[in-house]
Image 1 (cartoon, rainbow over the protein chains, first blue to last red):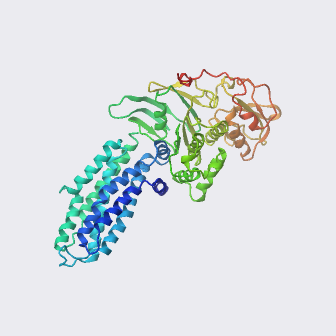
Image 2: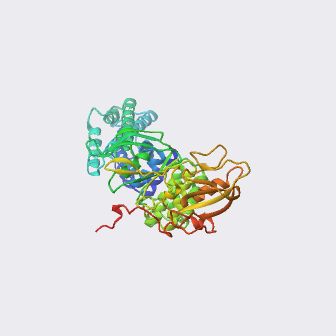
Image 3: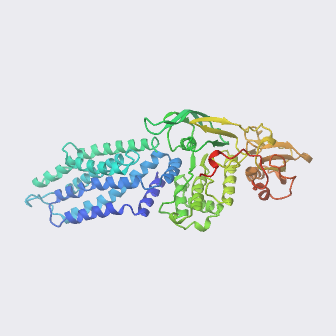
Length: 222
Length: 329
């Protein structure tokens, strides 16, 4: 698996296809993260964008090889493992974006509630911010795995489907992403930290199931 | 490896591309699959290579495999050597060994000068050499070649022929599709034809068949064994202690206690290697072009390489080219 991850990472870096989502996320942080903003709601703002960004990175990673090259790797390592390596590379890249985002928000924001009256403990808030980012990242991976090859083979369906899914999961009350983000936003109003353990566990299961389904489908569709 | 009632269709309601395929793939065998365009050959090869899973039926005992596609577009952000090193690592080679194998196989195919060339700038033929090299560099137990010779130059085709013989001599299995009926002629252990999604056996050359009936250029090796050694024979019938040779080898007693081994030309290097590396090693008296099926005149006292590889030099009684070989209107 190490060799596969190395191959996929080199492929992603060499193809320069990761640049648009990386620049998008950097621009999102540049616009919304300002010195002195309330810490908890800024964590929520920074994490929310990771849903579409991680979905986009997943689509890039699983479609980065021409079909002939994919067949060669699939024969050598097994089609499921080859696909898993692509999804894990996307998750790793999204993590490389999420960690500096959390660090930047922690350093720049004001550790107080929205009205700047109630102080928020920085360390627990940073942990909650990190877990919210991970929840959004994993949901993005799940969306990306289910909206690109081999589940949805046409980009004409896959791209709108992933954007719609990302939007719905961010705003609908039943989704774990929405639960984690509203925990940060309501917590920011009152100055209390809600650590999203449950939403993170739920998205972890969802992402694992989505990735497993996609990997199992690779050898059945081509 | 065994295929049992294997069928494959694309999509839940799609038509069956392959149906009821029953096939035993023994180790150390060279299998040729034939069939018209669109008959399901490539689908069968993808199942054998483990890229696709059968829609029905089971494939059991599939060994470590490697696959060469017919076309290999090099739209990858690597150099040729870089790509091969990545693939060698994926195939389990560690450290500098991966890079060494990559260079070695590029050299064998005469593409060492392109080692540092980005894949996107390679010509079609050189891309195909990279595709073949990625499959060969880690000695796979099962090699699946989907018209892998297409696009290779004459020299590289012969290197691939010999590499195939080497894999078979090492006990590996090779399954190939090629539209040239002379490709590895006489060397294949079994021929199959895919017709309308079904796999049918086609005139098999079993090891017991008369060597005279096999087509393609052949080479006779006159070898002298150490005293008391067992006579060498094909892997399937070799006695204990005898050098294992490809199953297509015919052996006959020669003059002065030597053994005459007749093999398809592509196998000659592999047989010589097996004889020379046996413990204790065999002595090679002579390597000559075999008279008979390929119409070559009498023995010629030349080295193995000179006699081994001139498949077009002599008129060969080959079947007519497949219909799809004809130029398109």
